[in-house]
Image: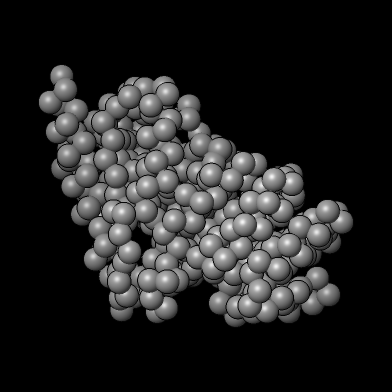
Length: 316
């Protein structure tokens, strides 16, 4: 698949999946031209509902449709979905274990045009804390498309975040996804880089740079942030002793927090974080430059890996 905005891959896959599963219905908060659920609306108009800018009510309508046997995909910007409708997600979706699929578009720093209020940099932390809710961050367009069927066939609530931006493909067209299972893209013994979501392309470039310097790098893709593949992460900790997490999210409560929680239970190891450092970000000219400016650059991952290896060496 060519490098296109991740939301486009999702929107096209959702419309195509609607052909084979008549129970799928799609809700949108008047931003279907941005979330690209308009593809589904054009193809299946009787199963598309524009609820207007009413995120909380939209979530509750989705719950009603789920309780009626439908599979609702509820869409809007990630920040608005997880913050404005947080109480409805907790009480009506998570507590009821309703079969609602919550799709947060424009996640992380990808909504560079609309400013800090539209950055979704704590959505993963909020959704991870919701009992029963599976949390997904696809790495590329292939994975975003494959996740449509996977989350539809999962019984129970799911939150999936999608970047507004074009992201490089990490996987080939035969890539398959399994909820809850991480993927080792590269084996290595010196350090492990663990990436998620739109940061995976940058993680691959960072690993390439380190390998060129003679470092043996293990590279993991964690598309499911909850439930976390604890076995894969703990094996990496035991075999490399130094880890770096990289995410387009606050380092608090996201991938880094989840990995730290896992290591605390199974295998304490050196851990460095790449992500937003407990701060709001400013605006930028585009997503790439904005990510670079706020500590998510390829070189930030490389530097974090070097720090992790230095700390590991001092412990010996």
